Length: 557
Image (cartoon, rainbow, N blue to C red; front, side, top):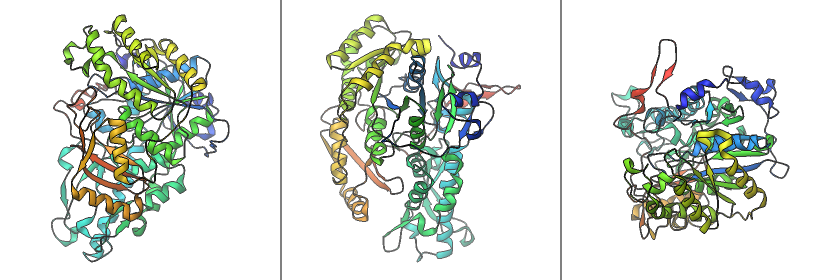
């Protein structure tokens, strides 16, 4: 059994300028953050019509508490393709401090498939999330400043101001709060709240913008509230977009680090996938595509969340092409979990449970095939898995006419991913590619919700209160009907109920709220008890993280 931190510490890191040189980036194009990480200051010359690398997107079956290894598969597959003679770049999201100190821990891979320096990447990195937090909260300050000087009859109705503040820490007590109390010098008293930075619309805008001009336009289109006549008020009306973009200037530049095997990785942007669209920046992906033969990127949570949004939101912008292949990560443990096996029994061989739990993976296979993109299932092997269990998963996938490969990336690094790498290259270069969206832009928002609910989640129907339907109608009347939807729901189930494991059927998706992210260019659809500001678990990861007298950080996984 590997200790991820000790394994990473055994590797000698390569100066970042040498990593950058592998993909044709010169020292004069780097802005250094220490010896082993840097920002890339290069003009975007990406042209989707010209020669470019092939894009591989990594997703997974429905997540479980055991973890499926999606990030390590992304990193390890990138190393594998590099070892097979393909110039390859991994493109990943930046970790949020919320999960790092909360339930999930760090997000830099594991075993022999990691990006490094992991401590720095997990903690502050190059300051991008802080820049997003500052830009978001600057707008909030300008909103309250306008309310203070204009009074109740000004541009904004203080009762209908919708722009919250953000913080990159899980802090449930800040979900709802009252500001401006204590007298007129402190502004207008009103109810508001805080979200986590990864759920900020500014984060989504950063990740979807192709350049500064696009960024400023999107920031200006952010809805901050409504006027006394109930007309939407935008950030550009209080002249906020310029100063917000100035704060994001450095954050727009992709970050380059390295894998344990000395290959380049871009780690840039970090939106959540259950309350945002869950993909790294299009700037990083575009740059990687023009510098390599293969780009391996990941999306958040299962295919029903991150992958669906990657296709229907990110690809729809036209800034990047549809992937040339999709890798769907599955584990024996996850299949058993979705068959109802208890966590302390997951390590025992159980072929019947694999058969039963395969319904969940089968639905994710069908989801990915619905987009018309070549697919490979990667069976991420844990040390407790038996050969009979791995063989059974393979046979079940083959019955679905789906490419499948065992992955030993955690234990063996690139050498453990040869079968997966070969399957991915064959799929990307030989299999039929007939991409299609889940829904067309001209459908109504309710029709789009129904398409995703029935086609991707497997729901029988969609239900919402009349006030939600009226709210959707108002969003459409304000010119946002053609927007794609971004469904915020639990990642623990294909449904909106985290207790429904496997492949739920005949359920009704309950829509509890909607909001227009007019700057990002999508409509957020809230389902079930989804929170935009998570809370810490009973025993948060923060309790085991420490620093020694000689400066070594401990307990960060």
